Image (cartoon, rainbow over all chains, first blue to last red; front, side, top):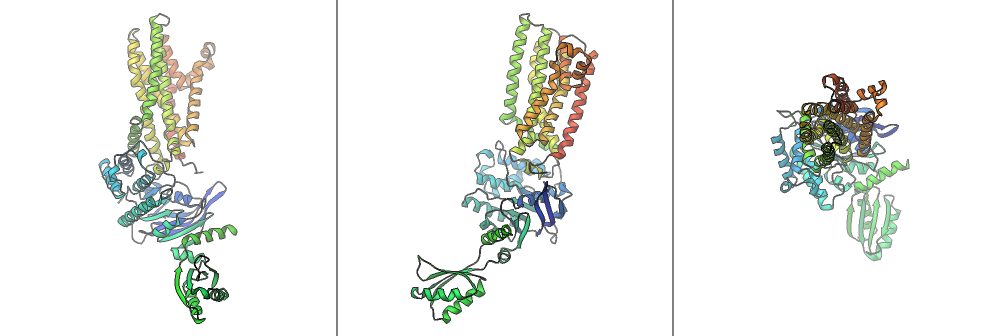
Length: 319
Length: 261
């Protein structure tokens, strides 16, 4: 893939199911080597976007290219992608190696080369000791890793992963994500990752788009999206307990403060929500010091993607 | 990478995979076991009645060949009706559809794999037919009817199952529709003799591949008609095998996930 060509280019893409618009003029791009998070509540249209981009569904409007190939060349396009669908079943009566060998052959690889590729992927995903084990004996986490291995069997230029960590315990999620990021780093594929697990997204995604009711309501880096959501920062300060009431009074007068509350369990500590994170935190500290209130501790917290997600999607609901 | 120097024929890859899935798992063997048991019982009953002179020896051969064709095509239908709707139901279809393999290759490969069920049915039926047909000296005719007429009917029903499976949203619907169609196909062979020998009855039987195949077995093996005089009964099985296979392949463009509209 050429260095300048986006891994995914999606312009005004719409998908309709009868009279229902599932995806409404969605536009975004994904660069090679980038992990792009596609987020949204249930029914937001994430899976429909992925299915349109992987030629499973026909879009009703718009255009898209994946690995530089337009959607009207499905065979050529599918040769360049790897997909882990949201509901991915596995043939329990097959061994993992047979499964990967079969898919390698479907991508035109000779059986021997396909088996070699399968073995190396199984090793890469920590399943090297289970290559000849029936898939029915695999745990859920092992199956998810196998699914990602299958999606990588053709060394795709673009990888679509729909909820790859869904239903996994924290260790399993960690395992899948670390294997995923190392695999992506190895072959430089562009990745479209759909997930409800925003901590995972925050950890691995370079950029994200938040979909709500089929539309993109925010697009950019995680910080951009948080900014789009208009969420400020949060800070916790510790003052001398005797001066906490005075400090709280001062804080509540400030327009930069959205909310300020004394901690009931930790005397002297005050939790503050800010309109903007850093400039306002500095102003608060200056004010308190200027008022002669000794500040014993400061903890500055950034807004989380999950808060931005809730704000953006709720805001849309309220419209 | 993704461009490979020696591309393989994808429908062959799928057919081999289907064969492995069918015969190395319990599925194919279970269906074949059921087929074998029923055929064994029918052959035993027919041979016993022939021994007791309750049944003409030729008639017992005719019954066994008809049973082999009927049960074998049912088995082929059951297997092919599961081929795509089963993938859909097991959530394994989407992974197949996002490979570069065309839907046509997918259907052809699966149909080739499912056809092995009828072939296995022939292999199982052969010793019964040969052993029973040796006495009345109709082994050649019995084998011809079993292999040629039976295969044409088997191919037709495999194609019917595949066509239904391509568009049915669930396995249950696919199997019910397939078996229902088989009953419709087989119905003319159960017409009363008076109706069956009338113009309309004869036409219905001859135009329907299943009843035509069964009728051919009856006429040649039981009524001692020559194959040459009854060759027209092979027309509808030939036409059905070609047309239904074509239809199944054409319907491959309708292979979609459940959510697609």
